Image (tube, rainbow, N blue to C red; front, side, top):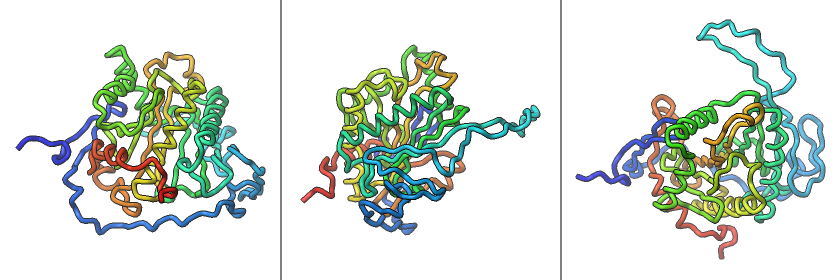
Length: 349
């Protein structure tokens, strides 16, 4: 019997994180009798009771302006604050380390309408979101080591408010995920004298089997080492360290490819596709002055849906105690995403 990656179990290496994922494609045949989620109800276009809506009163008593595009405000319940006391000096005990943590948390509303998501927006509306991301990164990056832009979409990914929005958390420290990526990209840079993710993009463009969308400036693909069923990465085709380095044309083409990707997501199961997504680029703050040439800007989408709009993957058991595992191969996922229409299902006759 010869090995077939679409049928036989194997492990794949993630060079960004320096770890492995178990692929078990034969498990797609197993019956499912676990949790089945309910579909999210259709939302009102304008819900005055939603605290993120234009003109609405938030829980802390603040009143939103009647915004007509994007709107940014400081999170009313932040995980990170700037003015907080520092912990006592570290005792030096290797088992009980402690360090200070300062930062800020902001909320960016994408659109005044509550029932509009990225795939239903115009390219120009998405471009305004990208512009605002760049503005926030430019401002916050002057003061903080890391600025994490991320969106949790859908209650299946823990989103507490369905109004289209993202969050921007800035921190005085480099968090675990970017620290891993920083280290592994630097090791690759030092060993091969080239940028890991640029080398990766070029090889994926040659192979084509994991590509989902691409244009002159961007590539969208299912990573070879993907963990989530329909996980994707967005990468610029030239060497770019941060969102703030994008040209005007690159921002427009990014808006276009984001719209196409999210339409494909929604059309996969004819539902508003849930996901967590975010941007990783070179660190900021005091680390801006260091050589960050090993970095390549990229976005990651982590969607949980596996078999249908109501059946998702859970990261439990083996994934928590041993290592990540997936059933669908990256190549199968990319093929399914490519096969769906670029006309959103709500507009199909």
